[in-house]
Image (cartoon, rainbow, N blue to C red):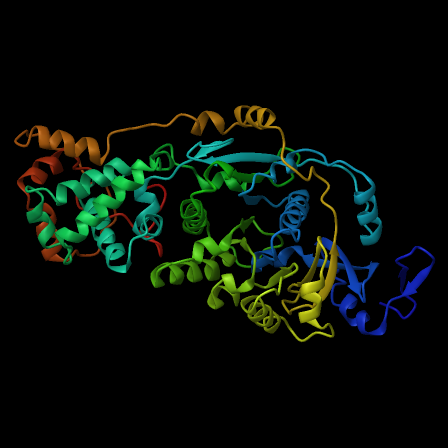
Length: 525
């Protein structure tokens, strides 16, 4: 920016020259390619609309963090970024924990506050709604039902939801392995409960003994946890039809990116469940998407709200899997933004992979707050700002920003007054939301739950007629699998009851499901 660059003075009396220390900051955001406009540079309390703070579109798959205390404007920042991504043809996934993001579907309402913010930030504001698909976990709430099969969800994520310890998590993994190799499809919770119940029964105990040291006591704990989990009304989240995460990647007919909003107010009292379901969605995308390397714009930007819930009390295996997924999914064209109150909510191995930062105000009322503030300051590049003072003095809708430039280098730290969203800043009427759901092309695919034959039905039938000989079904063609541990195979197929059962599921006998970092299963199995 030249020495003559000016901006209006805050009182409107005349131009105010951009101060010398702020010019290198402004120059760091003068990108030539497509970018999202976040807002205008703040320096000494003055907003400079000619000094725009932006993030290059190709850098959105380098992940990011939106952080700040409650009430500082994080939700509006998500809305602002989602709107601009959609406008540039990038699909977006948002988790709406509080229920106030549904307004993205409707044009915003102008007024003095919006006009003032637009003038301060150099924004040409125009009310506009964006294409939205509303989703709901298990169909509880307003949205297309999102379900996962237990087989797909996998033992690591399910252990997180059930609150199992490390030993129990490993044991659950062995139970999944057992079911996989026997062709016992775990579609819903009653399927898994039936398998565990069999293994703890008198007839199943011989099967249990050799499964990697799985004890009867641990299997009993898992069974009780499952029973309690179902009693809390959690069964609706697991089953078929399973949600296909490819539906998050669609564009609207006009070429704008579809904004998929997972409505969570109805389940916000189940934080472990919904945060882990978000991780399942991300893991499923990771499995299915091909490698694309660096792209001109992301295939999807995934906002992970209330991120601290994901990491709370997580096992080492779970944290390792998150770190690996975040590290590798970038090459598949997906950007992930974690949304939380302070950067310390995100493990350092994950935080180190986040190239874009929008840090709203932090509070420093207690010694712990002061410690968190100092730790946050250390995560930013060197800056001419006094960041400790700045971060505690930011107003609502203001943030400290640093992103990756077009060549991948961090931009200077910029205090920013953020633009106003152009869509409705608040929820839409529930009746209107329900109409949008029923008019969705996805409604017919996912609205009605299906309960097909799976492990529960097969085990029930086998126990009712233990000596029945069902005709052997032809084996499906498959690639040669790695050799199994002989002791495990002998244990799996040794039971008389399961010899009979295996004949009725011959198409799947001996085929173990391929599982990922999280123990989730690949689609198309």
